[in-house]
Length: 448
Ligand SMILES: Cc1cc2nc3c(=O)[nH]c(=O)nc-3n(C[C@H](O)[C@H](O)[C@H](O)COP(=O)(O)OP(=O)(O)OC[C@H]3O[C@@H](n4cnc5c(N)ncnc54)[C@H](O)[C@@H]3O)c2cc1C
Image (cartoon, rainbow, N blue to C red; front, side, top):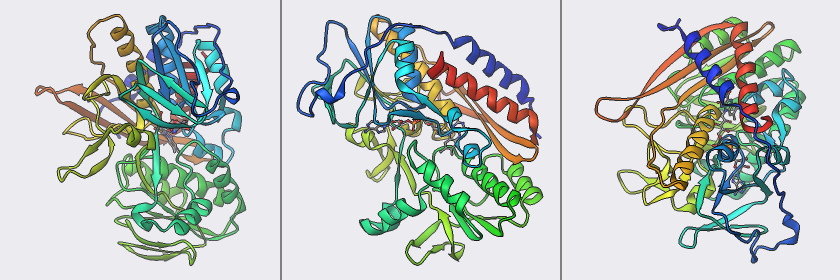
């Protein structure tokens, strides 16, 4: 059990989120991308200064929504490749029909109209910082402020080098569904079609997107196997020495609810994978599998690499994550270009990266909207502390969750410090809180 009461802090977070969910209905333009071509201006700039947001996930949608309140005089354009918003939070539950598709999927055009910004469905192809210009599949746009909220990329190169055949085969057959895409649908079909045998799931080496969620996914798949009496073993191959976060809560769930199904293997980083012969070699031994989910290495999204914003290791090599100001998320040499969400690199010598969560991306998005509002008025920026909160469903009959909460403060030496509270005791109340948390976030980002 936690040594401080997480209820009170959690309630405070939910109350704050509810208080900020203000509806602002300004008519928006929906651009007509088919009339444009890559070499022409997609949207010529008018008299207003413009914010361009790259990526309409948890971070980008939040920034776009809040800019209407914080900077009403600026034009806001959101560029997103997908035609619909697809939430990763709650997607593990969707895999086994605990929630339905309408809970996860939402309209971009509806959000843009409601909050008064322009959404363009397009692939962003290049960023030209010297000209303050973004290139897309349908034309280019000039900007005054740029917010890159493009999430992560899943890299299989650390396992396969440039072996495209192995990479393509792994993506096509064993994709992880860790980015908003059709991979979720393929994974759901795979789980439902599985008739029995050894099902393997690897975790990426940290830092990675939503650290507790792979274990939740294991619980959901195991619950499906249990309910449908599928003779299957689920092996979690974990590069870490122990389950984290909420290690005890997860261990109890594995042992008490799924003892004949889930085996957690620690120190099992992938050394070699043969996706054709279906054998994975790990530091903890070799495993032959019938089906699998292979989570490649997580890195900052491609657009952050194109932005030239990847940090460096002590040896001068790319460290795979965006180097930004730890409190304002702007690039060191550009106060008006921000990177937010999962792409952000280490922000503190005490804890390294913020947890890569929708909650954190949402908090960063709201902060950056306020920062841009202040910059637009010529005011100095004021740092804002954020937090993180994640609920993870471990039992389906009855529905019970565990949770983890992170709070941040400024230490005496000026560096950010983290406090973590794992709530290991699974119970129905936390599942109710999860649904409430999610509803408030969707309201904040999309439905108003
Ligand atoms: C299974 C699972 C469960 C999770 N559960 C939780 C949870 O319970 N709570 C929680 O807080 N977090 C959870 N997360 C984590 C959460 O989904 C991420 O942390 C969050 O989505 C990060 O937000 P983001 O804005 O950085 O990236 P994203 O939400 O991924 O958004 C990035 C967007 O950029 C777009 N994009 C990227 N490149 C381009 C381009 N070139 N052109 C156009 N568009 C582009 C993408 O299509 C995408 O829509 C979970 C994640 C997973 C996978």
